Amino acid sequence: MKNFKNKVIVSLLLISIFSLQTQAQTKSQNNDIWLHYVGKNMLTKKLSFTFEATMRFANGFSEKQQYFVRPSFDYQLTKHFLGSIGYSHYNTYVYGSPAINKRPIPEDHVWLQGTLSHQLGDLKLTNRLRNEFRFVGVASSTVATPTNQADYAITDHKFRDRLRYMVLATYPLVKIDNKPKLLGIIGDEAFMNIGVLGTDATKNNVGKTFMNQNRIIAGLGYVIDPHNQIQLCYIHQNIWNFSDTIEESNPTIRISYLTNFSFAKK
Figure: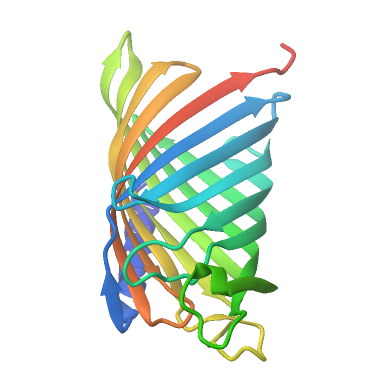
């Protein structure tokens, strides 16, 4: 147990170091609100279908930031290890000042994921690693002197590879009838570009920085019943744009609704 805890601490330190190493030219801040849903549905004792969706807003509800839908199939390979394969569709809007995007950008992912969970007494530790094979829309100007979003069009899609590593700890703060009712949540998720770093359009690169994003997570979860849970989390989101000219540092409130149902034959 001691060695496992040490590995988690080292992982968090490495994530923090990589985040500090990346320096962008312009820093911006957006105060975000994310509305989030995750529904897990057991099809058999080991196979499940998960559907995740979100709508994200920047600077309160004044600007749309992003939405995505993310279906996946998950298989419980061992007691502690869950393997997943999924698809994601994103649309990222023009928001903030300065804005990272010139026009809304579509993005599609095919991804593989492994989730390792351990129960240490009341403490649950989750390590999740996802490899996202991204197909990102590229915007090009359609006029000589572009002045607004309408002057840009999606003319191509570029392949970019990204790893996401999340470590998350949950602990029951309140129990009723010996069942968790109020959960404490803390963790971190790092998004890492994999491939040739740089911005040369003739190369199949993934961007100028190794770090694509980082999210520090802390919050509470309220267990309504075995099938429904609400979470309220603070997330500090850092984003480095493709050319490393802008770094966003975004205080974020995420409101999540989680469901868990079983359609497996008993």
